[in-house]
Length: 158
Image (tube, rainbow, N blue to C red; front, side):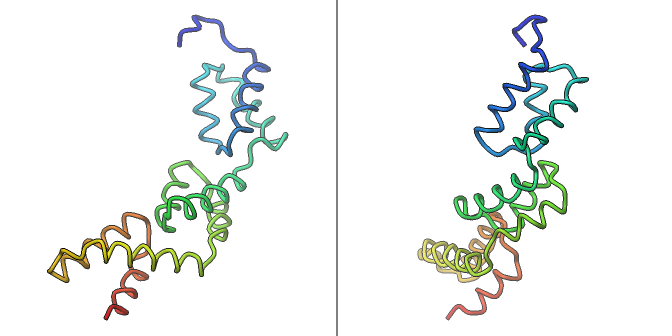
């Protein structure tokens, strides 16, 4: 690690993690990874996590809500990609369900329609309609949008 045996005290580690959590919302997995990165003794992990939760620096539901809302609004991710990313961070199904409610249905459909139209028109050189449809579909699925919703948009094409 580079600190050659000079391990942080529990209080020093806690102070560093308070800053880490105050800077941006974190999930438990992020904090645990940071504990390992800081070379904090394994026996101190649970107590540090408990303190951060108690002091409200660490709140998985709040993290999940912010993650879902932000990734939808800023990165234009669909529900499937957001859910997959939250699962990779070991977020509970309960918190994922709560987080998905942060995404307004009308805004979601509007964003999907806009992405669909932008991608469709960006492929104006593609003469084969089926290849064009596949490229648009692949793009939107990769962004995390549901195939059933995408198929509805194709039905509305003139």
